[in-house]
Structures are given as C-alpha cells and as structure tokens.
Length: 195
Image (cartoon, rainbow, N blue to C red):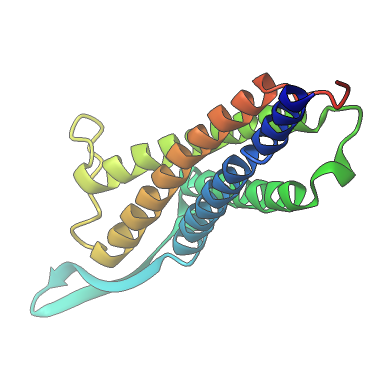
C-alpha cells in the first residue's frame, strides 16, 4: 500500500513537468511574433527619397527626384504579406496556447497547430527568399542583364531592408524550432487517470 502511494506521488509530480515546456514554447512563439512583426513594420515603412543629377546640359544640371519604396518590388510586397501573416499566425497561436483546452475539438488541436506551424514556415521561407534575392540584386546589380545596383544611391532604404531581412530570418529560424516543438508535442501521449 505504501509503495502504491509513492507511485501515485511520483505520477502526480511528473504531471507537472510539461508546464515549463509549455512556457518555453510560448516564449519562443512570442519572440517569433516580435521578430516577424518587426520585419513587417520595418519593410512596410521603408521609404527613401533622393534628388539625383541625371544629366548636365551646359552648366545646368538636370535633377530628378526618385523615391524607393517597398511597393515598387513585388518580392518586397510578398515579404511584407508573408511576415504579416506569420505575425498574425503567432498571435492567434499564443491565444490558443493560453486558452488551451477550451478550443480542443476531439484532440485535434495539437495536430492543427503543428500543420499550421509548418505552413507558416513554408510561407515565411518563400517571402524571405524572394526578398533576399531582390536585396542581392539591389546591392550588387546584374552586369549580364545590365541592371545597375541601387544601394549606392539609396543607402538608408537598403539598410532598413537588410534589417527587415535579418529580423525575418530570425523569425524563420524560430518558426522552424516552434514547428519541431509542435510536432514533438504530438508524440507525447497524455497519461490516463485510471490506475
């Protein structure tokens, strides 16, 4: 009888161990939310206007005012949308994590969270990859296609874009970790209450 009570005591204590993992997943998700939200805001507010001399007629320079915006490049628009959707996904999943069992339908909550996390990783990866390609093109140009680089003229625009890419890459890495943690939660089977 004493041994059974000790076993029950051990089982009771082991039931408390997943809580730090729950909080760990929640904290990683909050940091991923902050990273993707920062990437979204920095790129969405990224704009620089410069007046450049394009030609000189006699002694009179001909100036043109040009504006670099993220909306001018479809890859950057996709980047903003993908990071915005990843931020929204993380915000919803934080609420699901906090509400917990209230939203569980036939035990499918963990599976749906894992699937949505993987879809968000794919979306975020596509947006970051497209924006990285365009950033490389803007920084170095393409001599074969005769596309000139623009980062020597719009330094602030390129610096802000680089910061957004770094934040998005951090968010992508965190989302991959979250996805692995969500899949691992599927493997943990809850212990039955019957003795």
